Image 1 (cartoon, rainbow, N blue to C red):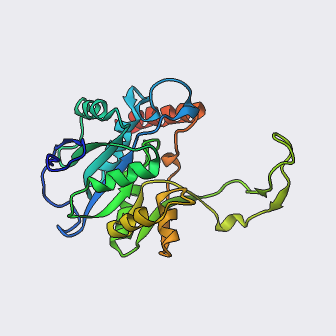
Image 2: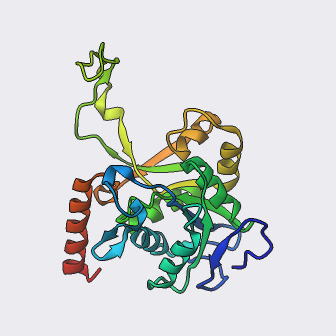
Length: 266
């Protein structure tokens, strides 16, 4: 995939054929956008979160492979730190990735929302289904990815994988003083609550419209589509699609990788 016609400093790598994805027609192609421009300060000092290693391999590479594992995904666009596109491009070149999938790297912006928008802008026009996936969710199984894609191709404008909550949730009011007790104001019905994961899947035109018009109360891309008044649907998520945010999450992720390698030769 060539980006020479684009005025922005896009760094791209083409690693596959231009044929449509398995299971889809030429008019229903799927691309994945992975925003990976954040620093991940909660993991502590060191490399950006997406470049931290997991089982000896950067989390970003795990996330890219997770998207490319779906035969429906024919393009993965990684949105790199604004000054780190060349480094991320070299990282992708240094690791084995599926030949059937194209890969590209674009510089990101100052916020996640801006980075996703820049990733969307790098997609060729023939892609009409878009996944947005957190680089910090490196272990999402391919079955979850495929379920999201199938739901979008089935007509849903936006799809999120999610899990039921195991814990009771309390809504609280601000504490009277910083660090003080927070008064509980409500206990939501747990059976109706879900913990949302990624990849989130979208009809491309709807997601582009959301990024053009929604600027406030943005928690994830699906919430932007909700603000357009469009329906977002949920498909089952997976317990291994958790987000690696804190040091303890790294310990759990390492255990999952070790188990996969032992059982599946992952």
